[in-house]
Image (cartoon, rainbow over all chains, first blue to last red; front, side, top):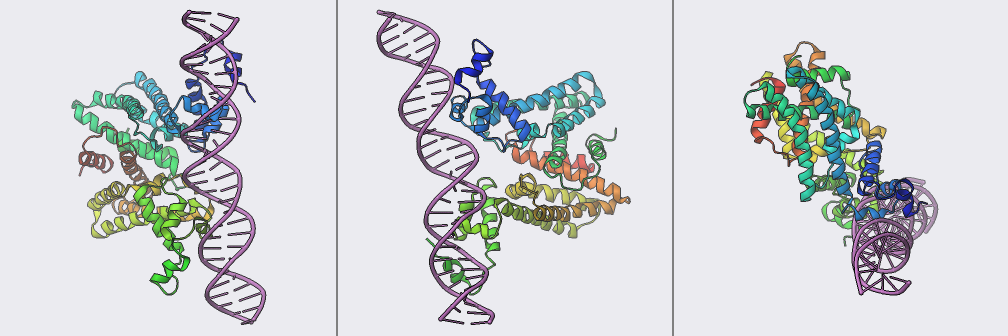
Length: 200
Length: 200
DNA sequence: ATGATAGCCTATCAATGATAGGTTGACGCA
DNA sequence: TGCGTCAACCTATCATTGATAGGCTATCAT
């Protein structure tokens, strides 16, 4: 088994990444690979190279780790959307933003589930706040894209929320009920976007 | 503590409801009240008045109970939709079906989650099959409503799937991320229906 | 009567999240 | 140097949960 100084000592003089970040990195890797519920605190600890109770020196409980990964998942989505956002304008941008959103969900199902499905105790004040903040930052990209097309900010907000919800539904149902006899996927996605945004 | 003959003997001569149904009834009550993850097999057993291991004489595992309740949840939804379905026709019927769907999700959040979110091991052949069947029976109501409006069956299928997904998204996000600063709910729902079905 | 069977129960597992309490090593300071 | 302090860990251990093993008992056909 690993000794305590092993990990840090073999790679770096001081602190590698504050151990907390290291835990989150390993947890993220495991969560994205195996899903939220399938990963135990012992697995995370082993991946990091510390004992399971040592996790609790950095996080009050398992949910706190999940909250951080929820925030990271929003970060991944946000980066994807910003990339599209910066590359286009107008109605085309809106459509591609939606497409990028759906692609994210289908390509990173575990991340998507952590971000949107996870029954995380968002009750904790700080966790709730930061998670909400991360979600809002991501959502604001979509809202801005609508703002470009709709003069009324309230209308843009409303449109963004309904479209967001609509996309979420498609991704969500595709992920959680794959046994359903869906129409061919690309056709389904296109039809869904047509319905939400109007025909291309 | 209860004795074994107590429950059945005090209420009925023969078999009350085959014990299995009794277990499902109590489990449903608990699940709807406290949510899927919050209910343990011991709680269910205690509610029924039997020991926890006795559950396993009727179900192979906890997930099997959840699958049955998933099917029941679809049953509740189906009944609601059929009621609306029988009372109206045309575009108005479609809109009211969607509204009934959304109402169901918001009024019976636990049932909705069991039906759509539950990470149930639908791997088991029988469970998967019956769960899928229940879902299809419910979905077919929506498909038929579209069939009344669209001549092409394939178009109706596609439309029904996209609209279903769209509604699911709204309900889903309202249930799982209530902390998000949503627009006023009735307005959001109306706007969502307008977007999915066209303005009323 | 009697042997099989259904339906339960007690005892017990293994896995998991979480806690308690001790050990170690670095660092400041007399 | 010697000593107190403190952070970071570790081992041992809990309580809870889903699940299994094996025995008891009443009913029922023969």
